[in-house]
Image (cartoon, rainbow, N blue to C red; front, top):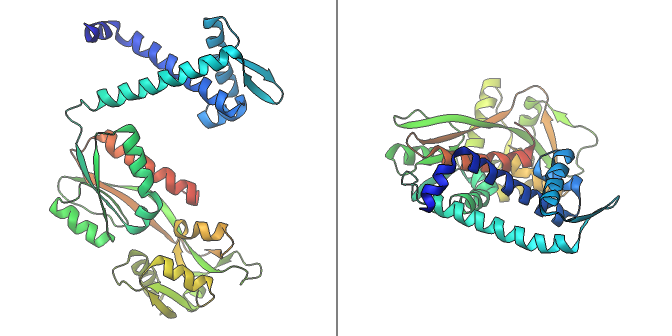
Length: 317
């Protein structure tokens, strides 16, 4: 009976429920931030639109929910009661959505996900959190491998979705570019006077530290570009991990060429300085590869988590 009643409402009920939920989300956000402008920014909407929705709520219930001033907003007594109620309603709404969503027979109960090491380090936990929150019935099985190993696992069907830095063409799989990430020349902080850029040939002739794994994508990329220029890189050290490689640079033993996302924290902390390449489009492309029959919602959810994380680190697309 309940299901029939819901279905008989058609699109109108769905639209009304969506509007009510959005109004409650707007109200809770403004109440917690104590600011209409900050809430509008966080919700990616205009202050006018947010203010209109809040006034509609106040009109509907016939009470003032906020004290408004030049310093922001504060909840009235009615607003405090409404805040508790709104939070409870939103929690129930999310629980219902997750429960009903889990009844979709087309949704996979598990997913084998392959990530290159840099992707796992930068976005692994963000992927897990996004799936747990929005598709909680999906169990993730994570594999962290270099791109060449991920390719082999994809070919055997052991991995259903992967993010890697090489394009693949396999029957039954989709492959598309996700984003371009710049590689930068990194040196110890304060070791350069004012230069903000460097030519790739000059960078290759400095004392360099490279990943020691011959199948490492960054290493291969650097050596391939050097070969195209007819230059033998001046490699002073080869180390097995990115964390060790960065420490070699921080201690002033050598310079390095690395993806910006891998060194953004050290640059912001003042441990490393970066120089961009002035005469070369020195970027690596990330691809998403997935089985054609996978739920497009799940693919989109995970891809969005990866893209948003990398954008926040490199601000480059």
